Length: 61
Image (cartoon, rainbow, N blue to C red; front, side, top):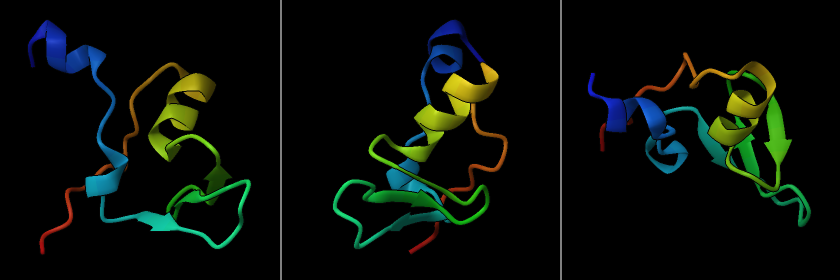
């Protein structure tokens, strides 16, 4: 993986585990980590651990 890809967070909108919620203040959710937040779950994982999300899987449509 090159340096640019290492700096980018995974796109949660393309993740199998990404979910939208009905909660106005916390619209983004992750089915694996149980995160609900204003930010995308991948950002929350990065802020908490300093690493990119280990559970990111591209959903196939």
